[in-house]
Amino acid sequence: MCNLHGELLEAYDSYRTELLEAGLLLSSGVEGVYGLSGTFEGIIEAFERYVTRSGAELAPEVMRFPPILNRKTYLSTDHIETMPDLMGSIHTFKGTQMEHLDMINKKEQGEDWTNNLAPADVMMVPAACYPLYPTARDTILPEEGRLVDLRAFVFRHEPSPDPARMQIFRQREYVRLGTPEQARAHRDYWLNKGQEMLKAIGLPVTAELANDPFFGRGGRVMAATQKEQELKFELVVPVATDKKLTAISSSNCHLDHFGKEFNIRTADGNHAHTACIGFGLERIALALLKTHGLDPEQWPAEVKQVLEI
Amino acid sequence: MNIEKVREILSTHGRLTTPVDSLQDDSDLYQAGLTSLATVGLMLALEDEFDVEFPDSALSRKTFGSIESIAETVEELLE
Image (cartoon, rainbow over all chains, first blue to last red):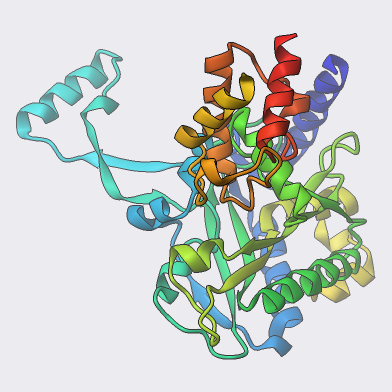
């Protein structure tokens, strides 16, 4: 176990060093937070266009939200109950002139000045689909349900030496709101389609039954429940190492969790079910760079052709 | 004896939609409204009451599926 841990750290460090030296990632001094080069961003843009082409026949509604969301919306999801250790709460200074001086004084003394802050009305977005649900609150869906194309930066506080585990990264998603059958069919369709799409660009993905990283010992019970119900599948591939595979996409059924919380109903009056496919954009770029080399110009012709680069 | 204590803890921490009194020892607690989050509270309360710690192997949906199954697991941990 210790050996494997050591091996993993070495592999993370080695791939990250390669990426930094090639100028593809730019260090911020904080683990898991990077700037990206034009080449890196170009890969993400090309992959996004590929996702758009792949979903075009389904004519999704397109929505884009910022990486922060209403604190009340955040509290309506069960993120604080299930993954409190990953959240990002935004605080700011709302004090008086005296309190300002006190804070500056603490800063200058190297003391903890953050006690002088108060929460703002917003939280970091933990998953790209969260900002969508309040826009559908108290609505009845059309018979055919709804399909929404989303992309957002999401925040997860899990600093790591693994370049594929960023604290802030983009998810591109197709979210379905509809009947239980429509939601399940969406998940199953994209689980297959996602594998085809990623294999077509030379990423040897496999599908794995998965669970979210629920907090604490109690989280193990939640994880077991999620697995028993086969709600989450991940498409995994070697990125920094083949000793531990990295999820680059996931397909999830949320059952009527969001339908109930936001009172979204189907035409028959029942709470809507939701499901999504998410592509982890930075991870997909990292997997491509690992698999085909750090210079996209030199990638295999068929990969460039599919990605139109 | 444990069964009675388990019922008592379940009624305080289980947040069930069906009253515990109306449940059989082998009734499905998930059917009775036990959520995964309530399971966490239930587990911590059981650990506190019986002074035991559920090992990872017992942290499954099955363990908390019925009053009987909870009591059996606690019994094993007390041995």
